[in-house]
Image (cartoon, rainbow, N blue to C red):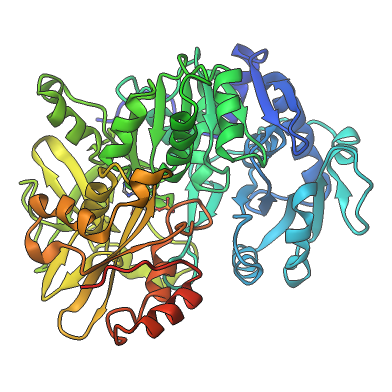
Length: 563
Ligand code: AMP
């Protein structure tokens, strides 16, 4: 016997219609390039999204065609988020920080037909525009003079018929696509369907996660080209939460101004963004009123426990999220369960800093080196595998990546984890980052977290580097905090700080102090770059000349500590 319910397709236009009917008057605030604030509403954004869709149809865009965006976070970008999928086309958010060669590859591979480009990003776009076969380029600006050979967004919308958004007839149609940052090999695309997007949006809004309510004001400090700004444009649309979008101004001071000035209640960002915010709060405690902020979400990279504790002191209580572009992106969250709530403060802090438990509809398991599934004992490491309705089942046109999917339909995440009772996940490393020393695995994330708990440390990265005797050995790269106490900290101080918590062979073979650590295109710490820069570190002779040479090549300042 079958159920007797309606066949009701889960599509983005259903969310759009809901917003039009239920919360058209709710506000959307964007920071313009000139720093002024632009205020509009869901009603107005959707009205314009309908015009955008009508204009695209008039330009020959048909269901299934790809429409690229090359934009910061702002209300015009939201118009594309809502309008492009609702007409059946596929929104492809280009990562504005990629190299022109990579952008050429990604836009060509996706087959992008039209590009929507921020006027302020034109210099970057121009560097690859002619290498991609865009049929139309539309420039989104604020009344600047037109660019020859392009269409002006405002003029286009003015002359357009409103689209009725009735073309999406199948929830399995593609709605959007996003390329992974591609730390090895070519970037690969996750293609989200209407169904997966709607289910992910519902998942984001579950009470246990509590990432978006109608009463919230949500600030996406994560770019709209990084995994759909973690779903916040659609969870805002569904719930009617007020949205605040920072435009190009992602520096800590501008973000803090928005957090306080716009009375933000939910903010999402990678740990490097939060650590920048922490530094300003430490410098000037009390300067910003963050009392409204009830959810401060960190994800995209491991957030060290020390950062949780430090932000707690400013009344900013972080929640840890884990996800992947391939998972739309939400996979797990570290809200405390009833059992953990009853534990003492140290235990609660420890669990907050794990990657948490899988969200409903996401299943997890981990596979060890021998090929078997690992027990949920909190100790045995294995590669995390996942499945669920918003997890990719294949990459777009990438047969060479078929091995990322198991024969029984699970996605191999590439994250090395332990899982403990009740499903608490701890990420030990990305598979490429795990350090293999003398046949054993060392977790760089665990070492980084412990380094971050030293008062002199502002940021830490641990990389595994080729070693003549041990295959690989850990090198710790550390940015000191400001101030004379931190300046006096030595490599030996840091190693002594780590020693009680790890087996001796886990301890970094060297510590280097550097001025800054590089970021990836989505703002995470870039381990791949540092591994390349320091690749000969344990192979080259330890002379001061070689260190000077190394300093030159790395553009950082080693003040040594090699063992
Ligand atoms: P991306 O698709 O660029 O967001 O990268 C996804 C990867 O980021 C995951 O596979 C993890 O390796 C890493 N990641 C995401 N969230 C976390 C987290 N909370 N803790 C540790 N690593 C994370």
